[in-house]
Length: 237
Ligand SMILES: [Zn+2]
Image (cartoon, rainbow, N blue to C red; front, side, top):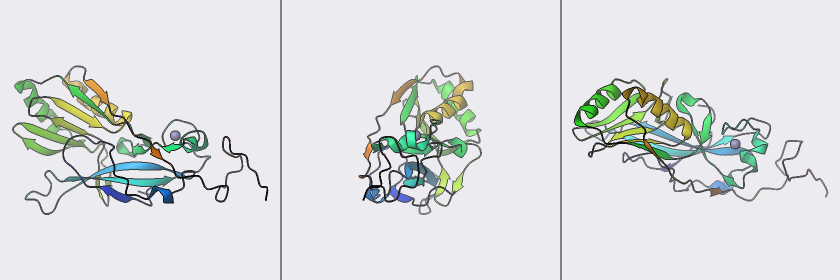
């Protein structure tokens, strides 16, 4: 994976529920240039060697990395605008996360979709269906609870582990909860569940707290000629 030169481990894995963007920012953001890149949140799954079954549940690892971007490039957030007119112009970071199968990135927008309680029969069918789907990896399959991680197709493996693109959790009360970190990820998961005819889920979006960018360093490292919005290319000395 070429684009993540300064990856930094910021949070331990939790097999609790959904991916939430709630990273302790131990990464020193004052050291990265907000004019030359975006922040990317990536979640990995990896086995935990000390466990009786290292594969289950395994653990999640969330990393924050910096993706270098130039002003003229299409913004990595997928808006279709140039970086200079989009995320570069923001006064705060809006972190991105990779789309399934690494087809670009999307703005982080943590969300859950909760389906109406399933009957015992529907739960059995659901388990069989999801366990047979190669895009999913089942990390827990207990009598009253099950948990699948969306690895996508093709799966994407990195030195840190398998990339995760969302979760599906079957809770002890019979609720089915889908968790995803972006609209694109949620759409992929809902697509995957569609053949089961589970009805319309209740969607909930969690707020993303903006992360302040460090003060811009004047001119020194700016290489684009056109000058960003509101930033005239003055070279008076
Ligand atoms: Zn953007």
